[in-house]
Image 1 (cartoon, rainbow, N blue to C red):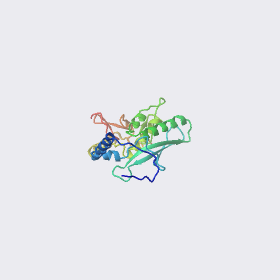
Image 2: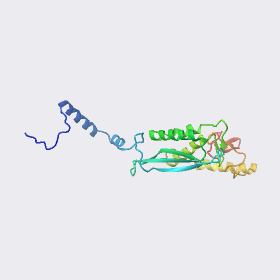
Image 3: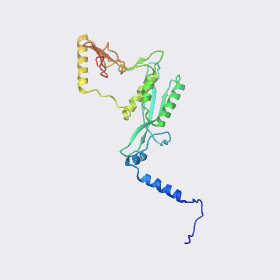
Image 4: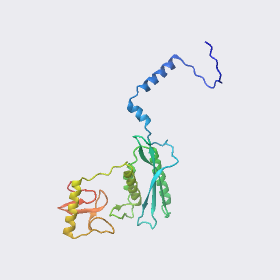
Length: 239
């Protein structure tokens, strides 16, 4: 049998019985792969090798603290994986922090680069929230509008990050049952009726005199029926 080659040879490979058997074995293993394995190979996962698209959708949050006369603007951009499929997910990809206040410029830039690197690494990045919210300022924290206590500026950036992750579905907000919410409203009404403590509209949406809840860091803990109960998250010393 004569074979005529009309093109220039640029590469060749010698096929032996052993290599032919290995190729056939690999094809059979690929064909025998389970549907779940094929799905895992097809679904795009977040990792550091994912290229940045030309356009990203993001959200900008404003933080105004008593520590500075200038506000901080935090922009978190998200990447959408597996778009237009049943496996479409939205994940943080990068973060930017901008402010007129240049006192914290160095550590703010460092923080944004580290956070963005962790986002692009893939995997579970929700642990960043608890790590940042656990940072305490040695000079003392401050209360933000609504009566929530922030132990530091880093903690409030972590709180902002938590808000964003909740909005895209990465973190699920624990739900309070209707029954528990009704009991909390009853205790609040009884507390205000007995003590005459009205709501302090300037600082908090909860009664004046409420104590700080160690769980949600909100001044919403009141004493009713001999038990400290939080009107914000439902935390109770009596279980």
